[in-house]
Amino acid sequence: MFKRTIDDYSIAKQITLLLNKNNKLTIRYQPEDILHVKDTYIVETIGEIVIGCIQVEKQSYIMSELKHLVVHPDMRKRGIAKNLVLAGIKKSITPLLYATIRQDNIASLNTFKFCKFLCVGKYTTGNRNILLHVITCPKWDEQVYKTEDCACSSIR
Ligand SMILES: CC(C)(COP(=O)(O)OP(=O)(O)OC[C@H]1O[C@@H](n2cnc3c(N)ncnc32)[C@H](O)[C@@H]1OP(=O)(O)O)[C@@H](O)C(=O)NCCC(=O)NCCS
Image (cartoon, rainbow, N blue to C red; front, side):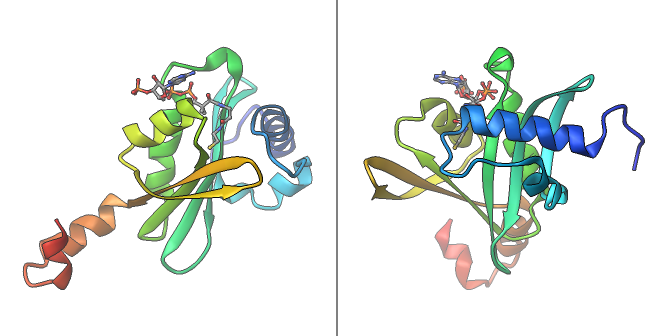
């Protein structure tokens, strides 16, 4: 791994600040929570400043969750979220990836739509409508469809 001018604790602390301020989460995160699973995060930095991140959390043999997507308010609308989601898709070690997005979070919905996620479901929790988005990671998608007589080939 390359040596960085910014250490892991500082990255984790900045991630918690971004998440706690911007993501309307029910849990307040501490740097230790992030450090504990640091290998699951992708961060975007400028110098020593973390300007965005996303987490790819494996949930089972077939499925991971993309979560904790956030971009610093001063750095939005420059394509950083799209790049983070695309990097998350590449990082996934499971065939399926999902993300849950509030129905009123237009910026996030547009980001996942751009990255080819499909909205496959909706549920309500408290007073929030949540949309479930799913994608098959391209590396597995290609393998399935290359097999001519595969039962799944009719899906396309
Ligand atoms: C959602 C968020 C990560 C988007 O970050 P971003 O870097 O500004 O997004 P991008 O610049 O990559 O833009 C992605 C898409 O969203 C659109 N978009 C960005 N901000 C938008 C806004 N305020 N309203 C509508 N569309 C918006 C962009 O136009 C782009 O779509 P396009 O390709 O069709 O033009 C950012 O707004 C954020 O951190 N929000 C707070 C935390 C959050 O809601 N996280 C997601 C939890 S599911």
